[in-house]
Length: 334
Ligand code: SAM
Image 1: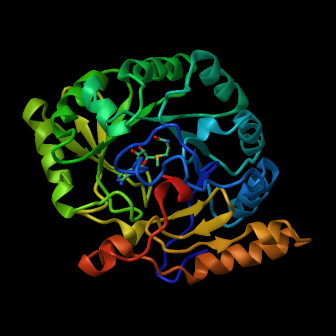
Image 2: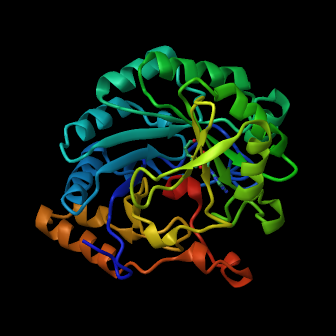
């Protein structure tokens, strides 16, 4: 199945909650996501059975890779029950999760792996505790997150990916530190260009550290060479250390957009499908799931959404698009 620009469906990102225990300044700034913020009510969240049903239907349309995210996915109680249901869907070849790591104890990492999670991505924006706390705006030390990385490793959730959003004037001096910490460990650091998702983070182009600058910061320390993508539509540009100490990824969504190969669909915690990270509105599938609709009817609905898809926000980003009303990343799932 192809969308209107000929792109196949391959990846599904599922947000299991819009809540998070971090207040990263670039994602959920405390001034906006404060005490009075109206998060989703429990009844509004898709149940695990509803998520598994729509996922199964989407695998029939091409989905092979599923990532659980949020908000902070480990805040959703009994997440293992969802993972068990998803792990039973044969067509899913890759089942992974993105977390801030703060709740990832050894026991939790093991129970996620036992439930069928295959891999994990943990966000680490700096190794410097002060910078880390300034970016996440919570009282959690970076050592706690590094322990979570060890816990994931013990549980066999390999290869672990480490996500680092790079923001000018905040953490670009941490690029080399983070690369050094994970070189030779088998974990893959993915440096992410700061994106204009949502409307609350005050994004400015001037705050973006380009992929070219990230690459040259790394290359000054260790020679690197380009590696082929694992599959068409893979998000990160892959680079390998020439001395054999592993690889890194750079997510170049601002300076070198990859809309042309984008094969991702997002399911929000409230059961809306979004065909682009920068979309203004989603398509409600929850109402259909909660009606007496058959799988065939749900399939028709979601395939219609994909076929009509024509989003290419990052390719047409400009001053005009920056001010468009966009959904927040914590709602749609990062
Ligand atoms: N709570 C989990 C976490 O911290 O990884 C999962 C959700 S979070 C929205 C997923 C990823 O999106 C994180 O790695 C985060 O750093 C990244 N992210 C959030 N806002 C971003 C932005 N404006 N630009 C680039 N990446 C962003």
